[in-house]
Length: 367
Image (cartoon, rainbow, N blue to C red; front, top):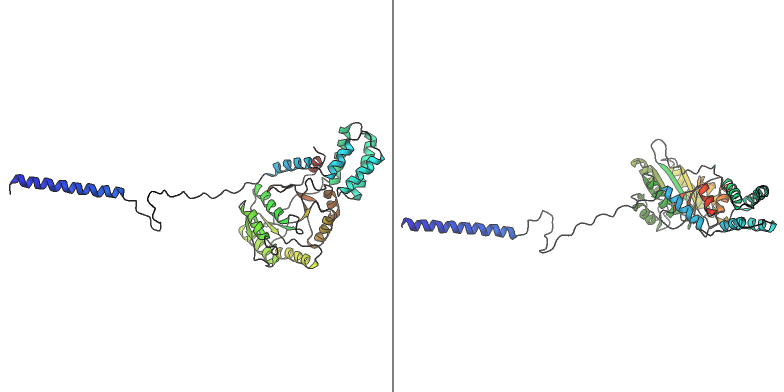
């Protein structure tokens, strides 16, 4: 074999080897990347979808803006008390018939006979001295006397602070239909807006949807709910909620209870049991009675019975909107010697706010 032939054979072999290497690299570039262990193969031509981001938690409205908004709503409402006050202030001359009509309006607004008579007597004396020629003066007198009647000296703080490192425990009671479970959820939002850590206890085990409803309220603001099976012992669920609150070091445990009929002694006794069992773990710092502001005298009957069983420390008035009679605030406070601490003025998730005497009076005066 000549040297030239050997040379060309070597050239051909090198070219073939180079071509083969090129084809291998080219093929490798065209193949899909190897799958990580545990992953399903990707289908050709499809881009994998990005995972959906978890929805953010709701940010509850701050207390200050709630108060301003609820005051405006109260001022715009057309309740009997606001109408009666407007009629009195718009009168050019206030005679006996005018006073009689005004007193009847006060009584019909659930202010009660005693407070209504007191207010009319005081106003007649004050306005006879100062006169009503100046509507501004008349309104000032009326505002001052209403503030006195509502009583600005009552402590309206919702006591949510526990002692010895334990959480504050708020027990929420009331009959069905007053908005009790909803109030617990809204109160959780108020506390979260204040930067407090909260745990909910769904001790209303007799109403099928109550625990689910409360859980939904909590999830919206990142608050967990302790619950039991339907029909479980309410005291046991309440105890477990407070026990967990102690272990986890939360600031406040809110316990929802069954909407007990105040005429059924056995159920009321059970409510007393719930409170006693809770206090084996931590003191109950607040007992809030939720009342529907539209129920009038029936609401006062409920309030008396509940107060005898669980030592109510504060009132939550719901539905205090255009259909309600604002005088119930005065009457329920006098009846129980317990302040209205929170009011609800609507169906919105943040339509619950601390009760403010000056703001309430300004609202019903339309200011």
